[in-house]
Image (cartoon, rainbow, N blue to C red):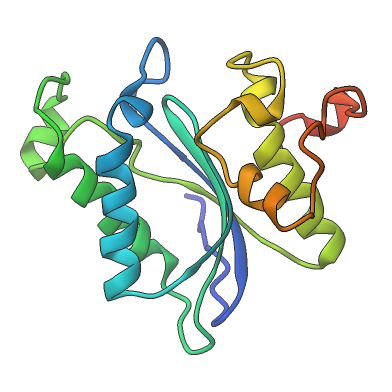
Amino acid sequence: MTDYRRTKISGACYFFTVNCNLRLNNNILIENIDSLRYSFRKTKHRHPFQIDAIVILPEHIHCILTLPKDDFDYAKRWSLIKSEFSRMIPKNEKISQSRLKRGERGIWQRRFWEHLIRNEKDYSRHVDYIHWNPVKHGHVKRVSDWPYSSFHQFVKRGEYSRDWGWNNIDEKEYGEMR
């Protein structure tokens, strides 16, 4: 049996991928974007964190979160975000017997991917990956055309130009970051 351990460092900065249970032909997150935003706000109010960068895609999320100096419990935050969102939307998904026994919905995958951001270069690569993701998945042709992304805030702060990624991205560099 594998002994799976997550890195837990108070005040650290992490990259996350959080997936819906069904990834194909599923637009649940963008169709319910207001409920998802509310779930983030409510959780953030109760258990503070900073969203450094984020992209919401139809059926998964990529983001970088920084936790408070005295806290490392990102798992609690994801559990709260996912459960709050699940309570807010209509029940129309298929639910497996194992999920029914546990009283779970069938919206989210149980686990998530987390990566401890190690340095500025690692941070920059993951921010770029987050913002490039809608293009990578074929949702838009230009990064600036995807509305559910922190890219627009980065442009306002002068950290990206509005046409970033249009002709200057080597797609091989933005494969899955695992």
